[in-house]
Image 1 (cartoon, rainbow, N blue to C red):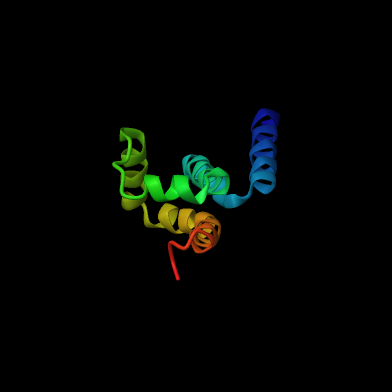
Image 2: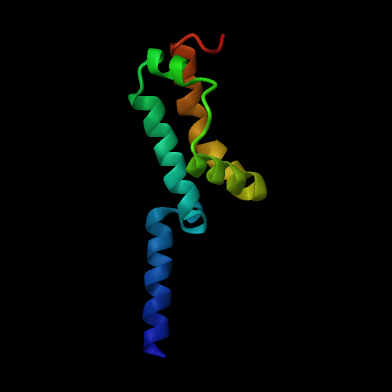
Amino acid sequence: MSKTLCLFALVAGLMGFAGVANAQHPVMDQIANKVVQKYRHSSCEQLWQQRGQQHSPREQEAIQLLHGDPQMRAAFIDRVAAPIANKMFECGMIP
């Protein structure tokens, strides 16, 4: 009984600390962090060069995962939209 209670308390604490979205979609969280970091650390020239390039098999797998789960996709877009849009604006990729 106490093992179950401790496990429940640990999980509840982790969910509170990491946020519910992260606890529900840890893979999405990793993908979103990687995408945001790519846009933050890439120069405009690098982003222009990468535009239209083929995705790696791992990236294609992540895209398929997001296509298959509307809730995960919404959480992903909520995480990456602002940083990507800001960088694209700075680089003249969007008006």
